[in-house]
Length: 419
Image (cartoon, rainbow, N blue to C red):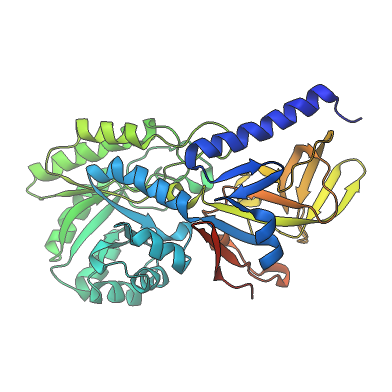
């Protein structure tokens, strides 16, 4: 049974609400007449020029998010972009040109940051499984390392006595996010438990290192201040203990994890975190932040084309993008707003938006209320700038997608389609 006119009006209202919320945030994605526009450029134009599926990014959205961070957290500490969120060279160059450094977790990410002209002294190297070659590469380039275990500290000391290092602490705080991206509890592999931290700092000093930074990262897509409040309290207690033991810690790496609005709620309020840190952190202590999703998440839109429809027990809308292109819905049960690129005034139908990959998990969302798309119609999967292309694969022999950056209303191809 088709929904009635009341449902139809509700669906149109929901679509307008999603777009209006995004417009208030970044003024990047909006319907003009019936056409969905990104930075004043019709997404249909991008699809005609570059084919589908295709990732499209808004330069103005990225600049807007960076500016918000610089005007809040940037006034009390330094910012380092989490390269893993999206490492396209053009996006890295844009972000680093605004004075932000890089948070990296591999030699490849370090090299990408250096190639995009990020100064080495603004790069931090984290990650639980750094190889000896990666450690040597980072040390040779003057890059700061956050160690995650006692054995890693020993490995660093063998390579470079006197190196300044951070030690990542696991504060035992549940970030209340998806369990795959929670990283601050005792069940997680990351960092050193806070109770064992004093011994790790003493080990580092005895090995000839200079452990001057407490580092922490409790998870991703965090939208509440409370996990940061709890984590900060434990880190500051550790700081006071270390200082009392004669271990001069001068920096606190808060990490990132700042969540964004994927259709409901709001972006993480970085201004509230700024106020908390101004109140509680000792004067003179250096602060670092490592946002990724917060900078690029809203900037990206995945444009995909409808191939076929099947209407039996459920209404399936089969598109040419798959879970290999955007794995977040399959892996994290994440929800992204899905909008028609050309809006039509028709009765809504609950649609399952699915891809061509040979997995039942290849589903972007279920029961999406929209006018039933026609074959060849375009759909926009919103807020895919973070952990979209960067987590994609060639599963099922499918090519990696092209990426397009819109700068001042003009599209620029920043990655070609290919395996």
